[in-house]
Length: 248
Ligand code: PGA
Image (cartoon, rainbow, N blue to C red; front, side):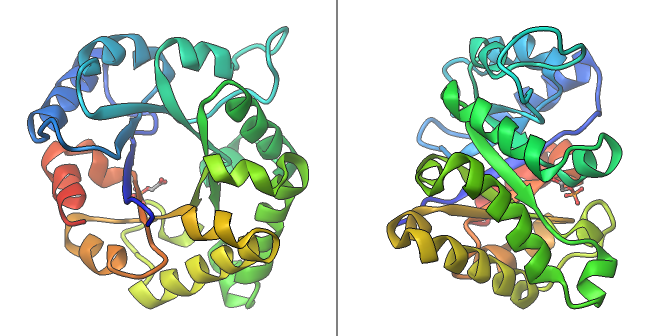
């Protein structure tokens, strides 16, 4: 039985002070039996938030991870470094990375492998643009992004990974995929993984991301192949984020 997972993606928001108060406000809404709730925070705030979240059910994640282990890679943060701050998850291939910073299917696959090598669970983000959806290319695009990682990491790697389906047209736009639109793609992703390993596919957590809010989360999370959410905007408000978490 798959467990649900709710992840916040703070992106490049907040200050040192506000990140700590947001984190504290989320923690205040959790009890000790809660689990499977994660915040992906700016890397520079990891140290503060590691201290704040120790002994808390709230786990930490990074928004990206380097595609190399160590060395002359200016500006990058390695999986080993993330691990030092008890970062349990790292997003890889978020559409904003792919669009603005040139992350390719190949480098995303490398990032995925680097994270996993250090015991950081990679959260592989995949999804189509509006133009791709309108051209009927959704499944091709998602399959290509997924296949690139399977080819490099091997299907076995997905026993310890998460996939986030995030249609680019729904990210930060207030335009959410309908429950059925999202379910259709989630199901296809699971089926694609199942072609190679049905057991891994059955256990794989596939999250939906793209304008998930307190008022639409329930319907999305009730779909059979939607195992949780990757939440941007609504994760910057503790009450909204908690409401989504509690709607599971
Ligand atoms: P959003 O972002 O919830 O603001 O649409 C989701 C994401 O980019 O992970």
